[in-house]
Each structure stands twice: as C-alpha cells, then as structure tokens.
Image (tube, rainbow, N blue to C red; front, side):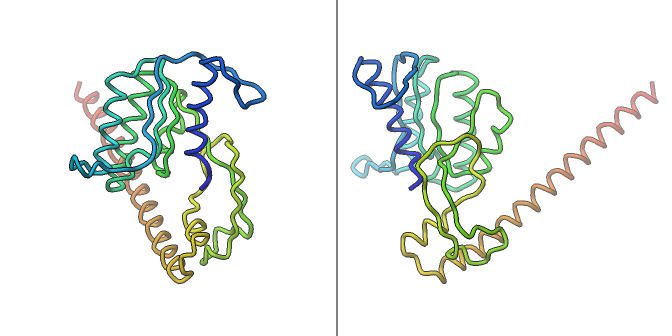
Length: 223
C-alpha cells in the first residue's frame, strides 16, 4: 500500500525506456546503461508443475545468481515471505550480502523484516530507504492501533522505516477492531520476547569475551 513495489517497477521500466532513448517521465534522469534487468516481483505458484510460491521465488533468485554481472540491475520484492519468518529472514540476508559483496550490482530490495534492515545498517554498500507516511494520533503507549489514522505519502525517503504499519493497513481493510487489538497485544509480547533474547545474547557475548581475555591472561602468566 505504501508504493514500494510500484516504485521498483517504475525504476526498472524507466531505465529500459531511457536506455532505448525514449521519453522518460522525470524532471532529471541520470543512469548507467545495464546489460540485463532481473526481477523477482509479485507472488505466484506453478500448480501444474507442483511448485509452491516460495519455490518459484527461490528459482527466480537462482537465475539472478547464475547470470547477473556488476552491470546488471536487480529488483527483489519481499524475498523470503513464503516461508517461516526466521528462514525467510536468513535467506534474504544471505542474498543481499552476496549481491552487495560478490556481484556489486545495483539492486532494489524491499522487505518487511526489520531485523534484516538492522543487519545492514552499518554496511557502506547498502543504503536504506522507506516509503513515507503520516500518522495522526501516533503514540508508543497506545493499546488500540485502530485509533491511529495513517496517510500514505507515496514518497521515497532515506533511512529505515521507524516501525511497521500492518495494523493500520488491517484497519483500512476492514478487519474488526477486536481482532486488531488482540493482534497488537500479541505483537507487543513478541517484541518483548525479542528484546529479552537480544539482551541475553549480548550478555552471553560479553561473557565469552571476558572468558577469552581471562584465558589469554592465564596463558601469558604461564609463559
């Protein structure tokens, strides 16, 4: 609903038009010619071939790795959404890492996985952006997300998206408020669990580092 998939399609279409020498609907257009445009957009299965939506996603992604070069343009829309969250996030992260380090090709990659965004916040080869929106009555302490009013601005802006607006979209789609409120309560529980796991992981990492330093000191003392 925010327009990210449309933006990606527009980018690919405008690049092809510009490379052909056609009129481009833009005030300014600066581009580098590409050898190929690869797309992994939408969601569909191939029922006659016994291929699930997720399998089709991976098959199309595999083709990109087989033929892409540093001069290619790659458009990947929500890779990994057809499987479990952790598996999908892990696969998406590996794909982005491979494209940015080995292939070095220009890539548009959209995702709803905020943990995936966190993985590449400090990566100099990856620039983050999101589709802007305006939310009225937004409050972190709010218990009923249906009280918020969201307006999509359809404008691409820099930086990671500050939060997910899935509950707002559910309200716009007409999902009953009781269901949305219950879902919001579960989401808060999931977020708390995730925060606790991250904190535990940081403590374990700190403990490992302390043990390593202790072992090194013991080794030096023995010598």
